[in-house]
Structures are given as structure tokens and as C-alpha cells.
Length: 320
Image (cartoon, rainbow, N blue to C red):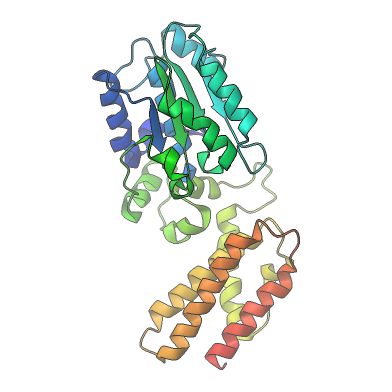
């Protein structure tokens, strides 16, 4: 069993199809040299990549993945398999020297007489130089070599890279499936899926429900609920309220995403009102989401001023 942050890949029902597709390739000995795992980490994409690597390196894989008993599985589980490599971004990019070193290692003979397997985590962070350095290995892979390219946003991968990988099938789970999973595995009875797009996916949602170990801080989910309540009050009063007055750099994107969801909810609730006003509220929501995408690259922002400006703009649109 491959676990990460307390989650077991075998208990994530939305990963059944891609997991079984890969295990079928193993059983029929039709594993391609490169697989693109274009599944967000919040849905278990990285977890699945590690599961696949373990199964591919197992000397006696089972219908459930790696056997867990062979020498390869034991080395893998101990974190010191000599033929398994992982690449992660150095800062915001995967750099060319990292890929060149990986390609050199993959060209060597396997030390355990099995596959050599590499996972490139968040492969959308390959820059142009590192992507070009990877192309030769993708075009002319060594014998018994498997490259697993994980990506949260596969659309950002260079076409020359993605076109040389076989992509695993994946369909995002419905909210009902996620709710049932939360009930079964996290004992969560209430519907908390309203903030899925804020946290990123079901695994992050489950993590967000956990309180801090020292018990002194609210869970991320409780904080999001507070943002939703305080944004509604702020839009009504015209000035920032409660938690929005003490917002931190680490919380600003969460807060703005909650505001975006609230505006979308307002649009749905009052869809029969003035069409021009509806369009303006929709434009404000889009503006807020655009700011969320831009914030990570900004060195400093006046968060209170930014939040207040959105409240005032909403008030001006609705003439309250």
C-alpha cells in the first residue's frame, strides 16, 4: 500500500480507472516508456505516481500493485532503491542540470536487474532548457526505463513533451462521490464540498478539516467558513469585517477565492435581476480570480486595501 499524508491510494475511488489501466499494462507487459499522470496532487496525482513506480519496480507485481515482500519493494519502502529517482522543482523551476543528471543516471545499467524508474514531480515546471534536455531520453529511452511525469496542470507542459508520453485516463469525481468518500473515510456528515475549488481537491479538503495539533488555531476549513461569513457581512455593510481586518499573506488567496465563490452564488441566486448589473458582478468575480493567479508573483501587496477595493466596487455596482 502506498500512502501519503494518511491517505491510501487504494481507498481513492476516483483513481480506480487510471490505477487499473496501469496495472493492466504491467500484467500484459505493455508498459510505455513514458507516462503522463495529469492528475492534481489534491486528487492524489502524486500519490498515484509513487504507487505506479513501486508497482513497476516490483519483481512480482499483484493485481493490487507492488507485492510489498520482494527485495525491490522493501528497498523502495525504505526509501533507498538505487534504481528509483525523483525530480522536484528547484524553486519555481525544474532546471536543466537536474534533467541532465537524471538522463545520465537512466542511461546506466540497473543495479537491481529490473526497471529504472523516475518520477518528475510537477513536470509543468520544466523550463525550456530542461524540457529540451529531456526530449532525447523520451525519444530514445534506455531498456527497461520508465519515466513518470506528474503534473497538476498538464496543459502547461510543452507539446513536444506531452506528445511523447502516454496519458493515463482520468475523470474528475463528482461532488456526490467526494461527499460519500468523506463520510466513509473521514466521518464527515455535513456537506463541505462548497470549498473544493478553494482548497484544490478532496485530499486537501480532508486535510483542511483537521484542527491544529496544539488545538490553539482553527482548522483551515473553519477559517474558510469565517471568511465566507465575513465577506457576506462586508458586502452588505461596505467595509471590511472581523477576520478580513487581520488577513495575512498566507490567507489572502484563500480569502479571495471564497469571495469569488460568494459572488458566483449571488449571481445564481439573483439571476433574474438587472442584466447589466449581473454582468458587472460577473466581471468583478473574474477580476478577483485573475488577481488570485497573479498574487504569487507579486513581491508585496496591500491586502486590506485590495479587499476593501473589492467591497467598494461591489457596493457601487449594486447601488447599495
